[in-house]
Structures are given as C-alpha cells and as structure tokens.
Amino acid sequence: MRTAAGEEEGFGRVRPREKGREGYRIDLHPLNAPRFLYTVSGQTFATADQARFVLDGIRYEINVLKKAPEDAVARFLSAKAKPNLVPARYQEWIAGLEKTVGTPHGIAERTLAEYRRYGAAVASRFAAVGVREVTEGMLESWSVALAERETKISPKTRRNIVSAFRTFLGWCKRHGHAASVPDLPRIRQTGKRFKAPKLSAEEQNEVLLEIDESALGIFLAMALLGLRAGEARAVQVEDVDLSRELMVVCRAVKGLGREAALGPTKTGEERELPLPSPLSKWLRERMPSEGFVFLNPKTQAPWTHWSVRQTWIEAAKAAGIPEKRIHLQGNTRHSCATAALQRGSDPRLVQALLGHASFNTTKRHYVEIGAEPLRGVVER
Image (cartoon, rainbow, N blue to C red):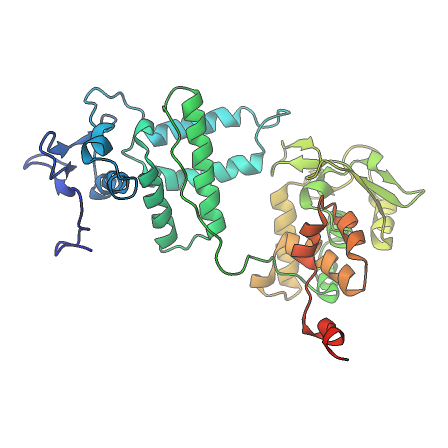
C-alpha cells in the first residue's frame, strides 16, 4: 500500500537532504537513534532511487526475515566505513577474470562478455551500496525490478544475472571485501521454454546456396553433421580422414574471437562422424595442408563466432527466411537433428551424432510426440 505521495507504507521514508544540501536521506522513523541514514559505505545517496533501494533491503529484513529494526539498519551505520562500493569492486572482479582468458582453467571469453554486459544492471542498481551492505532484501528487490523493467528480461536471463552477481560476491568474500554472501532470490521459469527456430531441409539448402563456395565448408559441417559452432571452428586437418570419409570431433573453441583458446567439447567426449557427400567434396577441393580446416576466406584466418553468425544471417535473409526465424544454432544443428528424426532415424543415433551426454537432452529438445503418432495407440 502506498501513501498519497506515492511511497510505500512501512518502516522508513526517503526524504530530500536538508535545505541547501544535495541528495537524499532515509528517515528511519520510528527509530529515534539514529533518526536518519545519510550514507552507505561512505557514499551519499545522489538519487531517490539509490536511497529507496537501500530502504527496500531494510524493509525486507524487518518484514520477511523478522529482524528488529535496529538490527536491520545496524550494518549501514558505520560512520567510518571505507569506500567499498559494488560497481568499483565489480569492475575489479572483471579485470581479474580478463587475465585468465585463454588459460587452462580460465573463464571463457563468451562468459566474460556476458558478465561485462550484466555490469550495467549491477551499476545502475548498486551505485551507492557497499559490498558489505548487500542484503537478501536488496537482491529480492533487484530481481523484482529486473522483471518489471520496460525492456523485458526472461526468467533465464534474470537467473543468469543474479547468479553472476552471487559469483562476484563469492569473490568479494574470498578477498576480504565482504563478510558473507546473502541468499539469492529464487527465480522460476514460467511458460514455455525458448526453442530456437528450425528450418526444413529445403529451407536450409536454400540458405546454403546463398553462401559463397569458399566459405561453405564450416556451414556444411554445422548443417549436415550438427556440429556446434565452437566445434566446427576447432576442426584441424589431422581430425579429417578422407580415405575413410570420417571426421573426428574432439575439441571446441572456447571463446568468440580470434584469440580464443581450444578446449574439449562440451561433454568432454570425442565422436567419430561419417562425412556427408557435399562436405567430403568441399574438403577434397579446399582443405588446407595443415592447421584449421575451416578458414574465413575474407581474412584467411580461423573463423570467429561473430563472422560465422553474420555470414549465416546474411545468407538466410538473402534466401528469404523471415528475420524472426533466423538463428544460427537453430537453423543448423537443431534443424539437422530434427530432419534426421523426421526421416525415421533412431533417436539414440541422433544423440551420438550431436554428442549429447544424456539421451534426456536429445529427447527434451528434439523428440516431440504429436497427436498423429498417438492415434494408433488409442484406436483398436
């Protein structure tokens, strides 16, 4: 319930600073000592939203966690608190992760890019909050705000953002910047899961025809063998045996750019796959003598994720595929699996082709049972 001024009823109020002073303060009424909260971790509240975010965290601890008001505000009252603000520590964490990219146990470039992107959401919400002042209530309030923002964020993305923030807080605790890591809000998936749009075999062929022959090989591997983009980018000449018409998939590129490192496949397993005729023909004519099999003809360097993706998008548009149905992995790997199942292939063989560790993954994403196949079950 809100007051006539539009502010939610309950403990505390957000008020402008005294006349002649810029910023905001939190009126801690009904507490009298102290009566006002002016700063967090040495940082004043520049906006009403910054102050309201801290107040939401205090209210959560009082109303949900049933803490006494004086206990809920205690952590914010250290007048000598040194600056230890969340955005600055978050950037410090990111800088440390950047140094691990390409190392055996380092972070993948793609994951790091996601963490950087989440930094905007972190900075906008925790601008005036110190790492030691982050509460369970703040995280709950933040999760709700992410769900209610005008640019919609899916539950999965919200989970990823909050989970990344927890990883960051764990780093803060290990380095002495925080005493503990609060519990995360539980974000549930509602409605149908996102399914990447697939193409029919005919549509897929139309897209492949729009790709220049010199660049075609990597897309044949993804569309006809169902390779993940990172697996296709990582194929080496030594992995191809043209005399036996076989390709061994045993590694993947861990990252998006040119400097990405090679690592194991997603499941850590290798698989030996037969070469389909179009791919075999392309390899016999264009495979280099050593190194990476698939090179970007524009740069004569290994493909980056972005160049693979952009080439497919341009070809799909040229083939007349509606933009909402263009999706690199959906149009290649997923479409390959779906077409194989529609031809009557054994789902267990499709699992082996795709390199899924569990048959449940294959079944969940590709084996769809409609009404017609069930007709023979119910009719006598």
